[in-house]
Picture 1 (cartoon, one colour):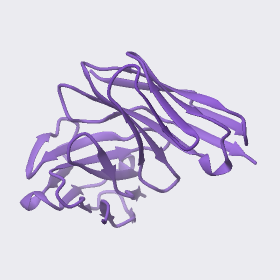
Picture 2 (picture 1 turned 180 degrees about the horizontal axis):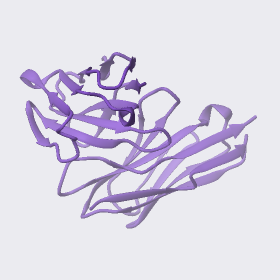
Picture 3 (picture 1 turned 90 degrees about the vertical axis):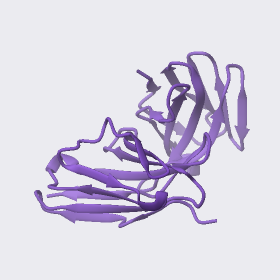
Length: 111
Length: 110
């Protein structure tokens, strides 16, 4: 069974440019998370979806970040415009019940 | 607010030298405590889930234990391939978010 798939794996952009990340969760997992992980730190939640509904987006910087999960399956996280401080690894995870499984992440570098 | 701290921040062991990693937590009702392993450039990989104080789980050279305030990840006779960052996370009864600690970076030298 395929795990959580994220793309792209790496992205380098100039500041003020837009960027988007894509996530395909494990089939049947109704909960989807986006986390951000800075170097040397643990993942921090950005947004959690239950099916297509964003049930917790309290930590999402809404002035520049947006996310969507169409049809309760794939999800896209967007940053517009990107800032230097957005450089990090963006992780997607999905769960059915108590266990969460993570993708490989997208490493974003803003220059 | 749920919080997780981990110690030490980094640990260097010789191959075969057993040790323990600590995860201390505060949570409004523990739904589960999770240990993950993360290799450089990869996403966290699930290791164990613990649900109640006194519970223990084992997998190869790793053993996780849980009390009401902390969890330990014991590593017995580690090998260089055990080198990784070990992340601890909690999930509280009042939400389904996973709150992570900063991790312990383990290096096992041959």
